[in-house]
Amino acid sequence: MRTAAFVLSLVLVPPLALAQEPAGGDFSVLPVPGAEREAFQRILWEKIPNPLWDKVRSGRSLTRQTWVISPSLEPRIAGLGPTYNRPSCLSCHPGNGRGEAPASPADPMRGMLVRLSVPGQDGHGGPKPEPHYGDQLNEFGIPGVPGEGEAFLEWATHTERLADGQEIELRQPKIGFRHLAHGPLHAGLMTSVRIAPPIYGLGLLEAVPEADILALAKAQKAASAGVAGQPNRVWDAARRREALGRFGWKANQPTTRQQIAGALAGDMGITSDISPEPNCPSVQSACAAIKAKANERHPEISTADLDDMTLYHFALAVPDARRQNDPQVLTGKALFHTAGCAVCHQPTLKTGAFPTLSALAGQTIHPYTDLLLHDMGPGLADGRPDYRANGQQWRTPPLWGIGLAEAVNPHTGLLHDGRARNLLEAILWHGGEGEQAREAVRRMSAGERDALLAFLKAL
Image (cartoon, rainbow, N blue to C red; front, side, top):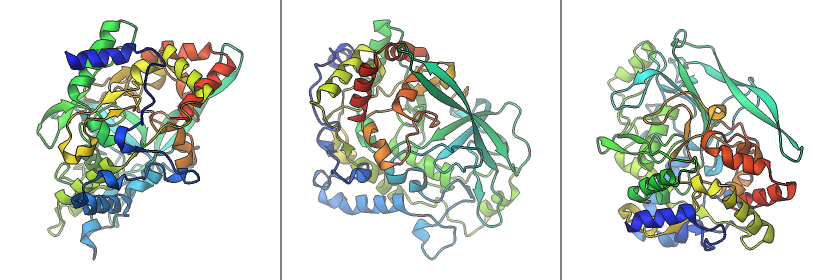
């Protein structure tokens, strides 16, 4: 009952009662003035046991590495393809930050991917892949293997009017496909375009006890305030059982390690102990031929190297909030709570035991997420189920570090598909369970909105 009482107190906490504590507890650091572009790449070496330093350096190198086609004189970084989207993690996560949506149909999807599925479920209750193209469209192929095709975005715009008369243009993407190499897409195709999210703070979020997350869902439901987060239950490939989903836009991955393995397989075609088979649907004969070559090395990333990449992600410090005693920021913080934003964007969580990196254990953190799914209404819906997440549900994205996003990546694309070009646009897309909070912001005066945005930009 202690855990449930703690979580319920977070849901109902008065706006300014929260202590001014570091965002990531002992695992956070203030950005260096003039070097904000590096804010998502900081490692707190003093918090990491010396015997793990080489593993963290190894994981950092692999995360930054451009992967090459097999066979190679550098076998450790070989295995790109047979089909893929990009050759490195940082192609989609520049500076360890977020990807960007293309501005026009002529622009490539550099930091964005397209999920594909058809009605039904796979053997573990997840999305059922499109029969000719799999669960993700891969634009490129290695020599002798055609890329699967290209996706592109067109943007439709409309204008929203705030209570004080200010007009805000919002945009919404429409996906199209061209140069498809293996015939038309399935008639029942469901798609979801996703920008790459930032990759810091994942270990702290993984260290939050499952019981606390479930207690948050129970407390929200009991409050009967129109907000009722739902946990996703997904397949944990390493443990061979169902588990709580925490990561990804729909909380469809249970662990950081599986999230990384999924990205290696889906984005770069690199197999691992979690994703041991290349993405080669049967109709893709050239891809299948590459797969069948006797000298092909599977898995292409070793268990030790995948562990090193995971440890590097755990070692990344969370950028601390700034200007927390500024009067405008304090006003914005109060408005954030009174508008109801803090119910889903939960300010405070606590981590439990975390043997992989003990420095992450026992921390009070301020990620501004509940790690739960929420129905965000038809405006943000992709219509594509993902385990227990329906087509209108999305995991609450953490807000820590969001005020530094533009400094790290010179764009401002927010939400799962990058449609929001600034924080206010992102708020105005909130529907469903976020509608009451959105309308509270719509009714604010210009000064109040400026204070709210100042608070978010200080996180």
